[in-house]
Length: 391
Ligand SMILES: Cc1cc2nc3c(=O)[nH]c(=O)nc-3n(C[C@H](O)[C@H](O)[C@H](O)COP(=O)(O)O)c2cc1C
Image 1 (spheres, rainbow, N blue to C red):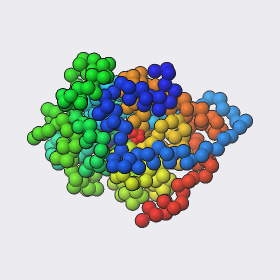
Image 2: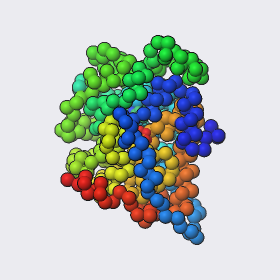
Image 3: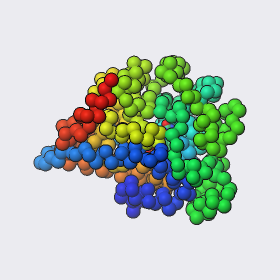
Image 4: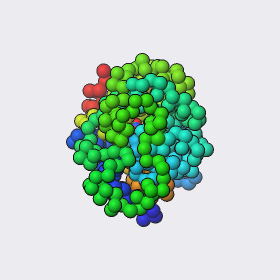
């Protein structure tokens, strides 16, 4: 693990250790992948202001996200099928996040179940909810998350229907994998992955199998999504989910100022400015380019968080300077997990924390909570796009 100095190093290692269909599942966006690419590349348009001869001692990245103390404001984003990047992946990632002092968010579409993760952690984790047509199943998921003492519900708004990812279709993605010659070859060339999988019983969607009624095809994510995800989901549903949950609520997948205002009206505690890591509406703007106008519109009413394209501590610093009170990483921790299990996730967090700490100092700041737009050389996203998106 020590050889990995960047998130990109972890990505290369993961590619060598994870069967192609699952590596591709992480490293893909919808259709032309233009939004997936823009999420990353737009960060480099934001230039940091280098300062000198400022006291750089006793620095701190610590703060809070929705009132919970964090060692740095970088949560692990909910990702489906994480237990296919590495055996018991969700448990290992949750353990790494807990030890690091950052939030872990468990996806509805996880391999390890809510109960599995609760058994292996002491600090409350967050649970991400997809709303299914079967409302009893949704109530039951929330009951299970409450019983597991999850301290926040992350309600995903941007996946009522699934954006097409060509790689998944071409690869015939499923969990557990099919036993065709192509899939057998992909696994046979990743022996360590196979050994891990042979030693765990967690190979299905743990939150769903055995809990959902009338589930006919649980191996194909796209088939199940098309059948079960509720395409009629509306702001009225946010109201009853909020009431039933009764705890902290984070709305994930807001990319538009008008939607951000509706989210603030709903009384949620936070929103995540997100385009699902470029996996849904291809051609949508990058998350970071939409952050300033959304912060301007609702930042005084709720916490505004962001995900999508964060690949370094400098990116976390840029997002913080543009007003994000929290950030999330998806692929960076998945690459760490694929590369080296729990240690790999810790490595991903270490890399980001170190980059963030040193860059903070070189911008002349000692506490991340003191960072604002004054550490930037202007804001490339202040005009144009921002004005166009204002209703
Ligand atoms: C492999 C993968 C699976 C994902 N599964 C989910 C999911 O189950 N629920 C969800 O709300 N978001 C899901 N997402 C989106 C992430 O939560 C997050 O928005 C995105 O990964 C952030 O972009 P980044 O990967 O560039 O950090 C997934 C993303 C990836 C890469």
